[in-house]
Image (tube, rainbow, N blue to C red):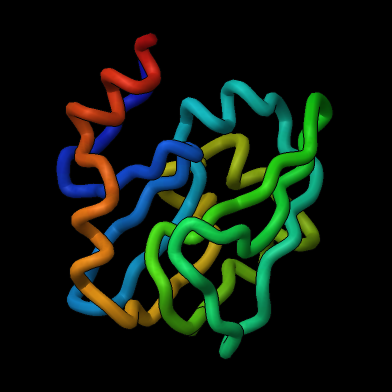
Length: 127
């Protein structure tokens, strides 16, 4: 089973969020990557774009399916993992690390309370 760090937050749509002050790094979980299969394309927002918690911010396409990516928090995209556009391989190889998608400058820290912590996420994916 994949490792789900306790210091991350998780969404029911299988994104993870790492928080460093008001900067939130977002990616898909290893569970999501395994379910999708090999990711072949990713569509991400531009830096400066606003995102809203619970709303789609991009798309990930795999050999099996096309899935929306959902923002765990509201805010402004301040960085995009640009290399993924040409080579989404890091999402397949390291979805919880090198395969991060975007960094968001969070508007409201209280939105983190709507996300799951690792024990709850593990219960969700074990169902």
